[in-house]
Image 1 (tube, helix red, strand yellow):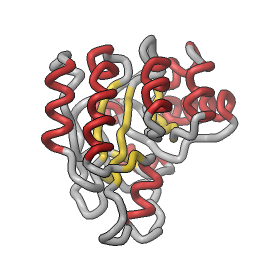
Image 2 (cartoon, rainbow, N blue to C red):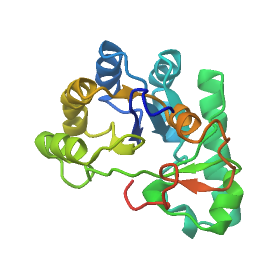
Image 3 (cartoon, one colour):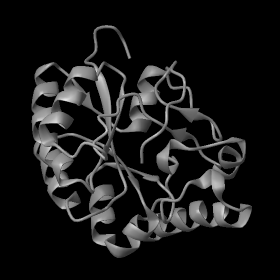
Length: 213
């Protein structure tokens, strides 16, 4: 990304698709914003129409495991099943397999990274919306922290978070931000260098983060 181009940010949403995802998709569409959804496999199986809508609107869909366990504590068989089963249901539902993994809680080790077979995406801004379920807090936490090139962690299963997104989009748009998918962000900021399977990223040049869901 050249110094004169508009700053970019990747908004990411975990744990869905859920009851509030449709409203979030309406908001993103109204602002012309693309996002990345790290979907849980069993939630895709329960709400396939929302996963298809995510993909159809140009959003990126990543793998967030089948049932949201701590992957580091699983047997090799369960670990593979959590990842592979989710890849399969996303591909069957949307026509495309996910190319990114976000491990639940951000927990990963060498075994998880090896089993993933794809890049692991963490985050650089965490409003802790899973813990502090307050729309004003989520809005302020994101707007106060976000910088060009950030990956923002949020959860579309939280109604307070979905309610915060319109103001976040409006204010950041006013600051000149573009809302891009994770893959688009890394292509821009890493001069087209591909993300490496088995490597964990939070933002270009940053050390991996991880803690929330």
